[in-house]
Figure 1 (tube, one colour):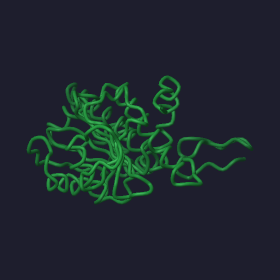
Figure 2: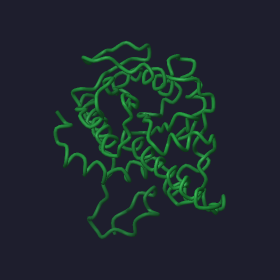
Figure 3: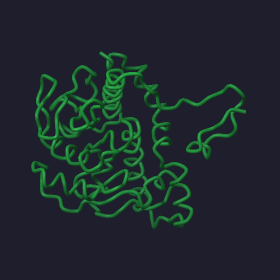
Length: 268
């Protein structure tokens, strides 16, 4: 029988001989992996557009540049998520200088993401938008509770930034957001929305999608009554099964397959 990676063993049974699961790709050159990261980023924006996560010009996803770890790729300011192509992406350094690209960058994107990437060398990608249920839940100033299997991925693995001061324009506020994120995969920005990180674009985007839905589920459950919590021991076990880096990447793959099939122009 084929071996199943330990990080996915809880979700799949033994594989027949010769059958494998898709795993994150490896690359022979910096340029090849840079191209892949940019294509993944463009696909991530298309998915955000498809899920309705856009709100005017707000929202951004970033991915660290492989050749220059002090720079990251981000969406052009004011461009619709559903139209972004890999060739549209902007490369900006941690000082806010545009290194590649033909359009300006959202200052809030630079201020927040530069500090997150600086504070978290392991965070290859970060995702933030003003999604409906994420921003509604953020107004409560409370953490996600372990009331569903999916929410357990965030159990004791997300922070809360509770010092909203308007549109983020200053680096010191970006630094406070990064501090609230800490070592976690996500942070709830009170009165603002959600931010997630990952070892890949796919992982960061998946955490955002499922966190947004977990916020929606908790809002619905709280409106209907008093949600019953999963006990701490079980929640931690479930997080171990669903909340790892490979599990996050793997759960995003059906979304990538759909968006790359429906939007092949994102590779342009």
